[in-house]
Image 1 (cartoon, rainbow, N blue to C red):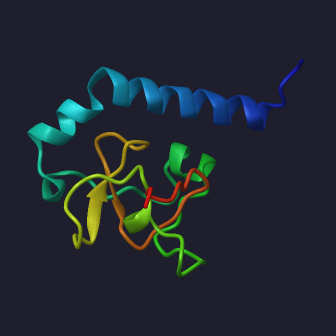
Image 2 (cartoon, rainbow, N blue to C red):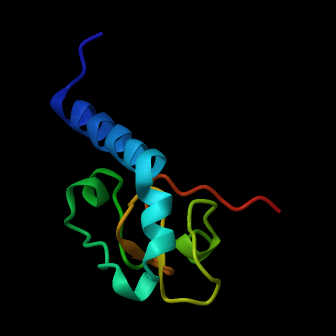
Length: 102
């Protein structure tokens, strides 16, 4: 199966993000507070591939209630497992959104 360039780039970025989390993203997050990490830009290559936005178009689906978000509840900017070394807006959203288990 031949992948088109867009799908190939998405897979490269996704795999790169997962490798980053596996090899050191969690340690990076533990060693730096969320306040020390840069905010994820919407035009970041991986953010764009996952359609990340700072403001969710759906009031029920946002980063604050996603299973991938880390950090303390109530913080405006928090680390996310998909974007090691950066923080996402708690009101944001991306296509990898997965609701927290009840």
